[in-house]
Image 1: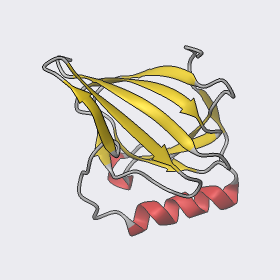
Image 2: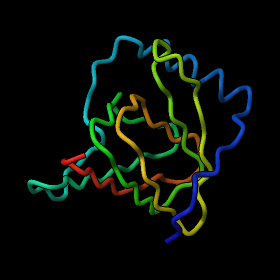
Image 3: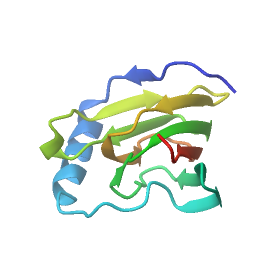
Length: 129
């Protein structure tokens, strides 16, 4: 498993249009959970699991704490912040062997699988951050 900076990549125009449409259609979404399943929790951390098939998205979620993402599989995933955030939509290419990435608290976004492979990650939430 690598531990490298994410490789941001250009989003094809048609896919960007699709993501902009998604962002507009979901503008009134409430904040949901950061991933689908809690695997473990104690007073210091919470461990989540997320799987997104191609074309699937997560809930709109807020990174309340610092996280480590252990990305097991996938090829291309987008981060779609609400339009009101003033942040641009971005895409990250996943290395074939996976990756581990530190995510600082504060961000609000949907994760959207724009790739051709299942996106699978384990999120480690640092509760004391």
